Image: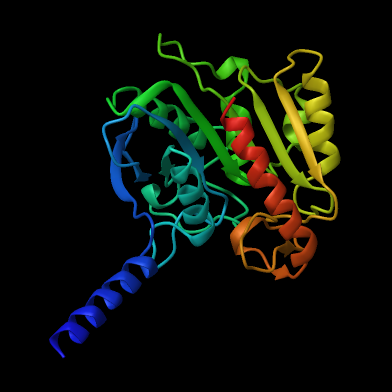
Length: 276
């Protein structure tokens, strides 16, 4: 009887271990010129040095009421973690005591200003961490975070320190309209991923932006996924946003088939781009 109870107990422990989350982040504090940037860090076990990805949330914010990291970003962080990357997720809104900004007309945190400053502060903090592979720090961003990324990788935004620059950047469905009109280019390899049916961001503007950049730099590439909509990379959720708002807080309608195919392709594209 005792052996049966022991065996049952071990089975329960194993089931609990399988059901437990694979990774849990912890909060770090990053100095800003004025204030503190809170960020969530997913870090592999060991001393490193690890390639590291700075992941930039969309206009819905990084976390919710019960979770510091929303499921979409948690899923991507775990995927990157399994590939041996550390993942740092700055909370640009929560650090400034702001909620989601998708429907805010006058945004207090601008992609081209405060969020670029957050990216610079996150990079500077990472450069001081012994566990970071300093020459393998990359960027990934979604919607508003991707727009901030586009501003941060422009040649004019290069840091003046002697530390290595970003290794690569991946922008999910950014708003390319302003950048396309300004003659955007990038100083680091930058991959833009967008659905052909995205009616929040503009696929034609993103293609125009990348095509224009090829005249100034060969470092940009765009992938347009046929039939996919805005937010196509969100797992197990209806993804199409049919409004002027974007990302997590937007009204949604299901187009799961084409979005699921695009999501699977994007996962491979991101892995290959960051492994360059």
